[in-house]
Length: 165
Image (tube, rainbow, N blue to C red; front, side, top):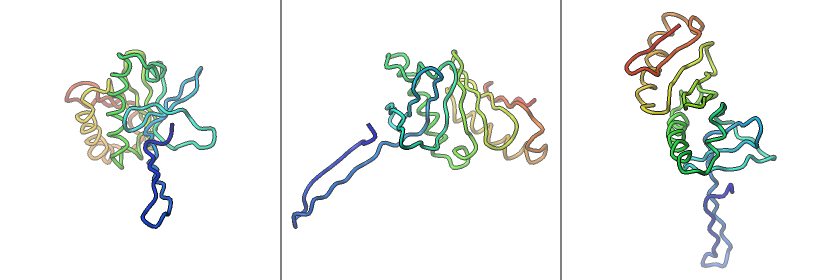
């Protein structure tokens, strides 16, 4: 499951060459009643190894079981989550800052950051780039003036708004 591609061949001198490309997990789905799973960059599910634990974004909540489902409607929702987690994974700041996504039954996401006491109400995975642009504004312009622990909740789920409490 962890091997994405493997090629085995001999070179001109008869030396055996083995090239392996490992699957790249980007998030870990944590489920309370069932085994956890990893989501890969290309939207595949991997079982969790008992020998290795990758330090990745955690995905929890009522929606976690649906993300592991193979039903067509859930595969589409998982693709949206993969796009969102890929975005977080590829952005150095967001990869370091966002520790966990908690997804409720309707697909609304609450993000828990590594630094700062606030929770981030993200809404659904739709329009994630616009929402991250607003979060970027919050981290670059609002927090330096108000302080890292002045807000308990930040919401970017509404179009073109940043709501802070």
